[in-house]
Length: 491
Ligand SMILES: Cc1ncc(COP(=O)(O)O)c(C=O)c1O
Image 1 (spheres, helix red, strand yellow):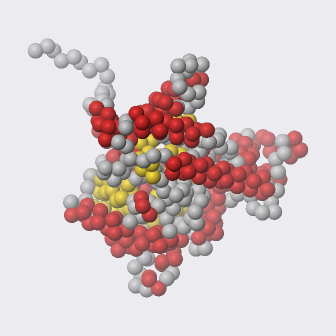
Image 2 (cartoon, rainbow, N blue to C red):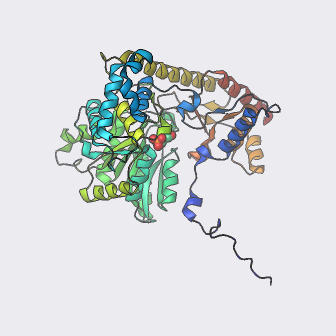
Image 3 (tube, rainbow, N blue to C red):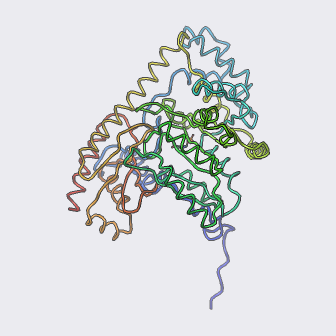
């Protein structure tokens, strides 16, 4: 026997944290990496052999990468926060650059609160910004909110990470996660070596939350000895685009009260709603707490953490990393541990915190920047809706594709029915049929979307998720043309 080679390094793929290897995050997986390679090739002028001239990243909800313009008011204020010396040249700002008085006033107010965007803030976020968030929630829901319960965070992802770290105590801890879901949830649970307890959303009713289905998933998991502690709800949905009704939300809260589950309400798409109105979990909870249904205090101790973000909606400032979560009903000792957990990271990015403030407290009617703000905001909303509808229409005309009516968020998640021949070909290539479809679409058109397997889907069904953020509709016809050829190829 030969001598064993000494390891040249400390770390090998065998000895690193196995939980990291276990975690999956398809929205930035193999397809996304290949699409970036195509993009680089085209940028270097080396893409002449490719059957397309541009790459469309429809795989990720990254609005400004896809040409969504930042809101002027937000960027004017942040420019002053980054370079406060400009505030000494008010005349130039107003007469030379067209900054309005309220931009300058807001920069002063925020600087008073944070001192400098280059300084650490309180771990929970700057106090004045948390006050603005609480006011926003009060106005949105018609129920009071306390700045003490607001935690600013570096994007909703950081909030989910903090909450899950504290909730997950052992490999037997389980969290109910909707399927399909945004893979942050399953990936974080994998990192924490805790259990995903899946519950399936109802595709045929616009991807609503099926509460009896959650009860069944919960009871099966408990029978297996899993200590289920929380239920995640994503509303409006990613990848589904569904938007939940007030009744649906009330029944989830009822379940949480009866089964002692923390509700993690991911509401990052709350302004991306095309059909009806957004209903927050916080309002749902407070409505129940103040209703006859609460005579015996059934809802008094429901633990709810609801998350919002600057990444989505008409703000689209995801590169700045900002968000918040509001926690109500939690035990004070638990909250103290959450506080300690976030303190270890010192504080969320301060410029991101300031953007949270601008998002929750935008220019109001009668203020100098209002007209431009409203025009930009409404313009983005209208464009998103138009593109969602164009894509939906195209899907309706495509053979074997069925898509729920777009209600909200930034995505459509149609079902695709592929032939046995296509499914066989995928098996031979050691791929899922949805993955093969998405790979062939990328190679033929430069459009990057994500196979349903990245979000979860009912056994025997196939889906893909696409954003509708890319400008124009030319890329929609690229998908339609590809689809026809793909179906013919495997007929
Ligand atoms: C449902 C959902 N939650 C959270 C996030 C992460 O948001 P953030 O950029 O605020 O971390 C995303 C991003 O796509 C999302 O879709």
